[in-house]
Every structure is written in C-alpha cells, then in structure tokens.
Length: 109
Image: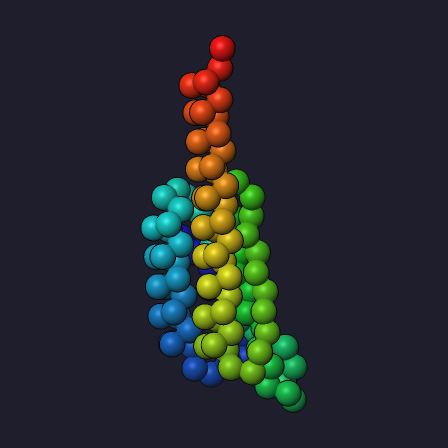
C-alpha cells in the first residue's frame, strides 16, 4: 500500500518501477503495516531541478526524507537510501534496548 505522485514529468515508467521496488524493500525490512508516500515534482521548471520526498508512516515514529537535484532517478535513489538508513537505525535502537532490558533482568538482585 503506497501512494505515488508525479507532477510535470513525461517519463514516469522508470520512476514507477523504482518506487515499486523501494516499497517492497521497505515492507520486507519493517515486517509491519506501513504506509509509504512518494512525491516527485519539479522544483523550478527553468533550472530543471526535481524534488523527491518519501514518507513512511506506521513505524515507531514517521520517517520523512526530501531531497532535490537535477536528475530525478538519481535523487530518487538517494532518498530511498536515506529512508532505509533511518529505518535500519530505528531497528538497531529497538534491539539494543531489548538487550539492555534482558541484562538488567538477568543480573538484578
């Protein structure tokens, strides 16, 4: 389940395929019901700058990343990488908190 919005861009098929793959990867790493929203829009028509934002809701806290650049595909890859990095960081924090709790319970007097 995700939303994909593209504004004022002619070739959207490659972005659509990248978005499908990104959502599959996010869903497989989170293992829960997450909602993903992807928006690709031109920042300024004269300069050919594109802004890509990806929002992931349904985790402990929402993950929102927005970047801009000249090539929409490369910016999309950067956004995907940043979102996955934040999701992995959130999962690591959860695991270390579990370990700390386990050791506290084990060695409590």
